Length: 369
Ligand code: SF4
Image (cartoon, rainbow, N blue to C red):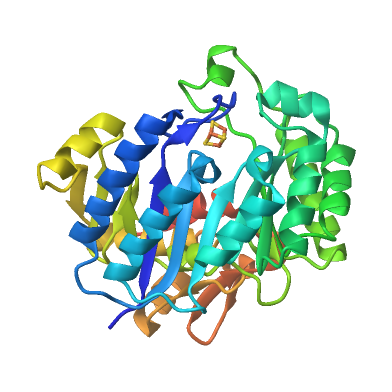
């Protein structure tokens, strides 16, 4: 039986960040109770086979806003419908403002072994600009508390390419965080339509500046013992995110919660991005989906390539696919950008920064698109 990977979207935040387009709404206890009731119903609907749970990831939104009672209820539902082991990787995303010694001990006690902290920056002005609700001191305290209370794997999220941000700010943040973390995610800011930043007409720094910041981040993370294993992700040896690796390997993932997007290996679905409609569908005994489609085999190859080439391990390919990709890469003039592995292909480390451009050129050179 295939091990199970599960994602849960927790749709609450205190105050929206300027750049964020994730589905979320204000947090109140009555809304939290409605969500937990609906989520436990969805767990029962979707996890009928009681499989071995490999990874469970609570994202959002802000999962760390949930009360201890809600966590107990959610974990009790998971334990009834899946086999959870000490080796299961269980991650929650947390805002630094909600991380206390008591919270960290409680999460550890219910089985959480990985916490991903939304640090984003350690510069107070940048945090205000992003409309984050925490200070840089909160963020440093948070990673230190998690480390000292024995969390197995602590991740810090950082954002770069923010207007007005100095490269030194990001480098300095890596230096100050690295004693306490096992994993680092560094994402370039993007301006997504519909967000406060898009409405304000925020413009991003020049692409040369962004590329230079990225290269400096890769070097500084490596100097701190955090090696890049995916375009935006860095870890100490053995601390890679198994949950995210499954996604980059085109693995199946059961997604739960409003707006969550899942994949069973052939069918993709998206849950309703409306908290009350989501809860109502489950109450009526219906799957709370707004979209569902079978993955098209012709696009599956490109999806696998797009995901796999993001990673250090690369994409797994059959011998025929390998030969096909070699021909496409040659005709695109990219043969020297790839390395061939026993089971597939990967990008040469110095070409990863060109990932988007390489994928576009491969698509254009492919005989059938
Ligand atoms: S805390 Fe996270 S999910 Fe919530 S608004 Fe900010 S970035 Fe978005």
